[in-house]
Length: 157
Image (cartoon, rainbow, N blue to C red; front, side, top):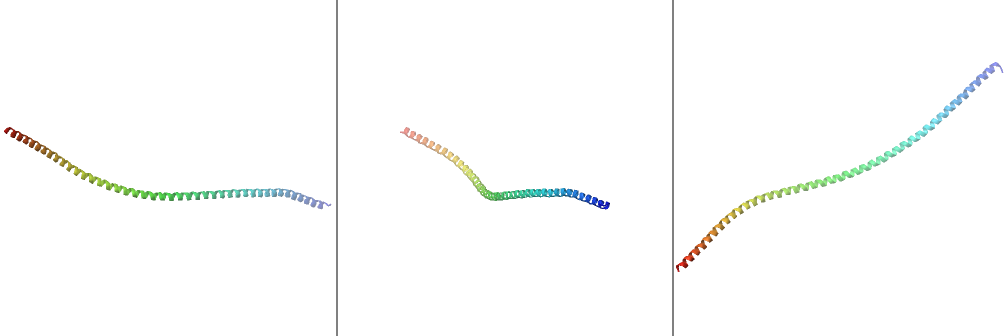
């Protein structure tokens, strides 16, 4: 081998060594990139599974909220019915109050009338007592007069 051939051969050997080193380095990087891609894929699957679980949980929460909304609507309807019934009770109580007011007015009128009647009965009682007194005096006088006349007639005999 000539010196030129030897130099070319050495250069080629050096290039081949560099290529093999680079191949090992690139192979290492290539395998590392593949590992990173696989890991990323696994992480992506786990993230997707996590998001799917979160989505499912949100659906459950949405269903619960719908149930709560339905129950609240039922409660609102029942409260509306209660309000209507209470309004009817209030109306009836207002009527009862009006009737009681009428009864009170009538009782007051009756009290006034009974007061007038009571006053008149007291006056009549007073007059009767006076009349009774007059009658008793008249009877006492007439019995006394009769006794006096009877004793005068008995004495004249």
